[in-house]
Every structure is written in C-alpha cells, then in structure tokens.
Image (cartoon, rainbow, N blue to C red; front, top):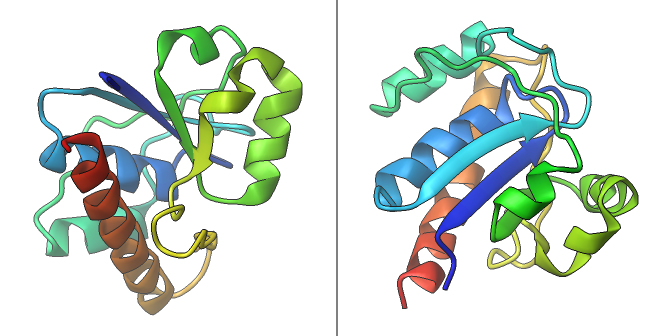
Length: 144
C-alpha cells in the first residue's frame, strides 16, 4: 500500500505546503512531504497561504521551499500534482515515476488546482477548499 506521498506544485510556497499539512492531518501515519518544480528554495510559505491555513486550523510553520529532484521519485509511493503540466514536467525529469504521478484533484473530477500566488485572500480561500476536499478524498482512498 501507499506509505509515502509527495505533493508537488510550482514554487512550493502556496499549494503544496497547504496540501502537505492538510494531508498530514488526514493521514498522520504516512510520510507526507512537498516540493516545487521551480521552488523558492528555503523560502517560508506565502503569507496569505499561512493566514488562510491558520484560519482553518492548519499550521504552515517551519515550512521551507524544496526543489523537486529526480531522486525524490524513488523515495515516495505516490506523487500528487496540482496541474497536468506538473505531471508532464515530472515525467520528463523522472520518467520512471510516470505510473505513480496523479493529480491531487483526481478524485474530484480530475480537477486541476489553480495557483493563488500573488492573488487575493479569497483566491487562497477557494484554493484551500479545493485542496482540503481533494486531500479528504485521497485519504479515504488510501485508507480503504
């Protein structure tokens, strides 16, 4: 079964950190991490992502942006991405991982999750809700 999940977005300061921490709440026994394809390495989570997450009881404290590397493909059983373009980019970087890359929104009608970076708090709120819903569905699937 799946014991480790990597969540990937673009900069690893908005969507994937939120998804990582939400997923950890639903699946505390699993190894959950996040990374970005063009990560703002060592940057904390975006201020608005932090604020919106905290409003929902999710802490992004201590997050530091991490760059996706091909070696990560072997470290995780499942790689969840926000957009189809992320799936294609990871497939080019780590072709061996192709079979274990899926959209975070796979169980929500194969929905992509838009990037809220530099957008309004309302945009972050909407994205948080999409991520939370997607994480709930993945948690249900991964726990049987």
